[in-house]
Amino acid sequence: MTAPPAEMERWTPIALNFDEGAPAVFWGDFGGIRFTEPFFDRTVDRWAASEGAQSRFVKTGIDVLRELDSAPSLDPAGFIFHTSRCGSTLAARLLKEVPGTVVVSEPEIVNQLLLANPHAVSDELCVEMLRLIVRALGRRRLGDERHYVFKVSSWGVRKFTLFQRAFPATPKLWIKRQPAEVLASLLAKAPGWQQWHETPEVAEALLQIPPSRLPNLDASQFYAAVLSALLQSAKAHRAQFAATIDYRELPQAAWLTAAKCFDLPCGVPEIARMQVDAQYYSKDATPRVFEPYTAKIPDAIRALAAAELDALYGAFR
Image (cartoon, helix red, strand yellow):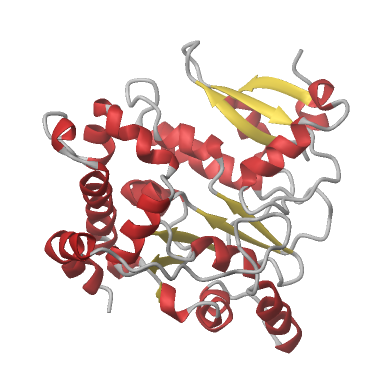
C-alpha cells in the first residue's frame, strides 16, 4: 500500500518499472543511512539488508514524484561525465570531503530511465522524470546537506542532451584518460556494459553499433567501439562542458578543478582530507591502499587506440 506523499518527503527513489504501462517508482525509507558507498546502489544494497527494510518500501506512480518535488531538495552543483576507468569515482569520492556534500554515483534508477523504451517514455517525459528523480535523490533527508554532486554512468554521455535539457544551468565536468590505458583496464576487468556485446538492440540504439558488426568484434574491438561512441558524444558537446580533467591530473584536479567548477568551498582542511583519501582505492568501501596498475599495455591495444580513439581523445587537450 502506498504511503501518503506527506510521509515520503525524505524517502529515496531506488528503481523504476515500465512493464505495467504507466511508469512505476519504487521508494525506500533510508532513515539515517548516508550515501557513503562509492556507488549509490551499494548503499541501496546496504539499506535493503538492514532490519525492517521491506516494511519501508513502497511503489507509486510518477504523480508522487511530482507532488514531492516541492519537498526540501538540492539541485546538483554539478554533473560528472566520463569515459570509464578514468578516475571519475576517485574525483567523486574526494568531493565528499567537502562538508555537507552529497554525492550520488551512477544510480540504477537513472540508468533505467535513460535506457527505457522510447515508446514507453517520450523525450519530454524522460526529461521531466530525469529532473524529478535527480532532485529526489538530492533530498535534504538529514538536515545537514548543503551541496550535491551527481556522477553519471560512463555511457550516460550518450544521453547528454537529456541532462542538458533537465538542468541547463548546472555545470558539467568531463573526465578522460588515454584510450589505451582505458582499454587495458577494461580488458583486465570487464565493465557492466559488456553485456551489450550480446544485446544488439541496445548497442544499436544507444551506441550506434550496427547489429551485423557485433559478432565480428572481439572484446578489445567492442570496447574500442563503445569508447569511440562515448568520445564522439563528448566531442559533440564539448562547448557545454564547464571543465575537463585528465586522469593524469588526479587527485589534485579534484580540488583544483572539480571543486572550483562546482563552486564547492574547498580550503586547507578539505584538501588535507582529500589527500589522505586519495591514497586508497576509490571503489572500495573498506580502505585499501591504492597500487597503480603497472602491467605493460600490449602493442596491439596501443595500435587499436591510435587507429580509432586517440584523435577523439585529443579533441579535449
